[in-house]
Amino acid sequence: MSFEDYRGVWVFIEEKEGKIAPVSLELLGAGRKLADKRKVELGGVLIGDGVKNLASTVFEYGADTVYIYDQPIFKLYRTESFMKALLHCSEKHKPEIILYGATSTGKDLASAVATDLPTGLTADTTELDVEEDTGLLLASRPAFGGNIMATILCKKYRPQMATVRPKVMKALSPEAGKTGTVVEEYIDLREENMRTKVLEIVRETTKKVRIDEADIVVAGGKGLGSAEGFKLIHQLADTLGGVVGASRDVVEAGWIEHHHQVGQTGVTVTPKIYFAIGISGAIQHIVGMKNAGLIIAINKDPDAAIFQSCHYGIVGDAFEIIPLMVQEFKKE
Ligand code: FAD
Image 1 (cartoon, rainbow, N blue to C red):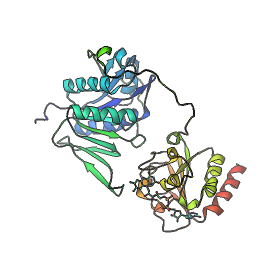
Image 2: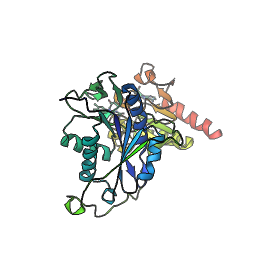
Image 3: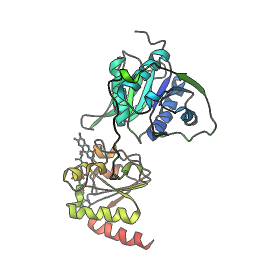
Image 4: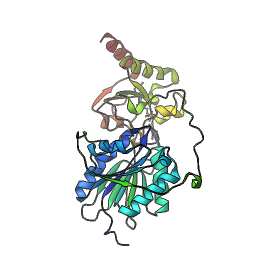
């Protein structure tokens, strides 16, 4: 198979209720670097109903070209319709690389597109690079229980595709007024031919804590000893106006719900300040918090691995240190 016709890096722009998902902006930042290295264009693919006005944001965050499918049939995400649009666009314009956020929509769409094209897909990527001369995408992700980073290549097919974890890549600072080429596309899809219909949207009534959006995360581990001991983590988080995070062992012990879990099988967080208290620093935990602005670890074992991944480390007993911190911060 000749890859000569395949050029450009694309980002699937995820849109919900008129807003672009933050991960898409992060991917435009990552995609820009790949496109510059390959000296090719960065494209954004916008699919929806009434989404044309979002093109300016896609340009401001780094795209050179925005491909738009703006039709009522795309009002709500459905695998079939979005997949057909993306296949149509990809077959017509032949990108070398397509990136998707590793969100429920991105994962669903990317796997459907990969199957139909067919091409390879690297899921849940945390690092991206490209070979300047060959255009081979180097998509890396934790493997073997997080013990190694595996770089996965797609040598035989184009486009090369990857889903990328939210909060891992950095969005560029938007360049106000930056524009580019708009390519308006159309695909003849009819509602009566669709195999799925959205009958009702049921909104969540209880608001889950968005740990991935918090500026301060106070995370506790098994070192807190018990659900009772873990209450100290809540106390410190409340005092600082932060959100509680946890290691997987804490979640498995039932001290807190899964959506507080940070790490490979939990959430990736990038707060300004991350406290890791009574957490040993297993690689599976580190991959979920290593990009925090400031990491402060408290552990009574001076040899704990967490001290290799923090900016400040306090060797000591959490049961002595947290009450002192709460007391001091309350004075502020
Ligand atoms: P421990 O490893 O038991 O560490 C407790 C720490 O507390 C120790 O370092 C100890 O010195 C310290 N300590 C004890 N008492 C005190 C005290 N009084 N004061 C201060 N410090 C004290 N883990 C995650 O966190 N997130 C994930 O997403 C995740 N995904 C995984 C996926 C796979 C496939 C696998 C195999 C594992 C995964 N894990 C994950 C589990 C991970 O490998 C570790 O087992 C886990 O992170 C350990 O949790 P911990 O640090 O709370 O507990």
